[in-house]
Figure 1 (cartoon, rainbow, N blue to C red):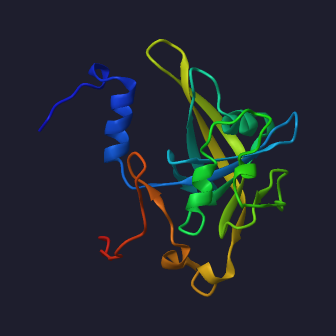
Figure 2: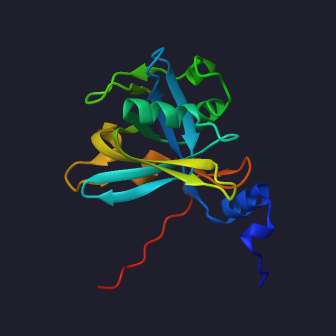
Figure 3: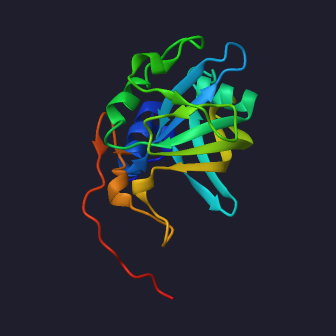
Length: 206
């Protein structure tokens, strides 16, 4: 085994090690709304997962750039709301376009063929083309510091207040999502992504 102390690596090398080993990672495609100019911001994040189901909560970690909050984190904290979409094969190329670095008064959606749709319970719009989206209220905002004491990441914990799911993806009788029809896309390392791949089942012990 190769033994490495994280502090012996650069920030870039730690990033490469983590993103190359913690795979695959689901991709949250997040929309927020600025409080000043009402600009819809959209961006993908793969530091994303479920926290709890009762009530339904999820987390998104947004890394800062040179100590500055990204639009997604700032908008979510200021407005207290955001929408998370499940990234899938049909949307991933358009979603990737929104990873561009733009000024706060520009919307990444202008780079895409995606369209907004009003949410039901919050003021932030969602993406019309997305087959699954979660309207979220910000429950908690946590920050994390680097060794120099400066904040390096904003952790957004959101409570889902409304689900939107395409009819053909949900078995209402069993309450199951038909995962193969969702066609989710996950992030690996660098510019590499993965589709769902082969499915298999293992019975959990009782």
